[in-house]
Length: 170
Image 1 (cartoon, rainbow, N blue to C red):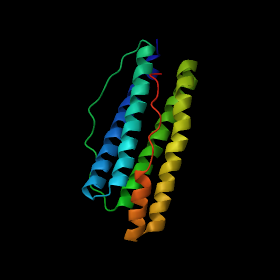
Image 2 (image 1 turned 90 degrees about the horizontal axis):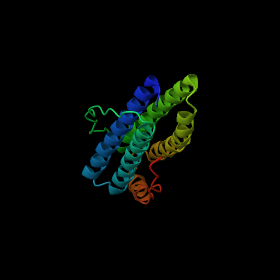
Image 3 (image 1 turned 90 degrees about the vertical axis):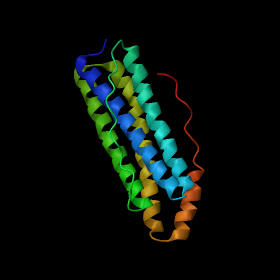
Image 4 (image 1 turned 135 degrees about the vertical axis):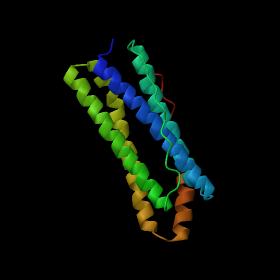
């Protein structure tokens, strides 16, 4: 059985992951509206990953005989100044998510919940990769600047992203 504080924190993280998933879906729609289907596809893969992260935690909470409590998902921002702005917001989103997972891991450590610490190790490693990908995307957008040809090349490059392999329940 999970400690009440950990159970609440895990539920908060599940809801944060679902919120992030929804935000990435809105970013994908933004890029679709601009006919930048490569960026749209990339953001859709981010949406799928965040949803998978939520489900990974969802199954973990249930495996520990605890209860999942879902909150309403806030309406995401759907208009961005530029494609670069959308990627900057995505990077900010990942940094917030990383901070949240760090707090969750710290709580599990303080409480001495070794199973949750072990489960969260995957998320800690995943966030390093998430931030790296988005930092690279932001840097490439910075280099492209206002050059539409460069933006179209990046759109094509981002459209070639392969999804991560599907994760098991736990």
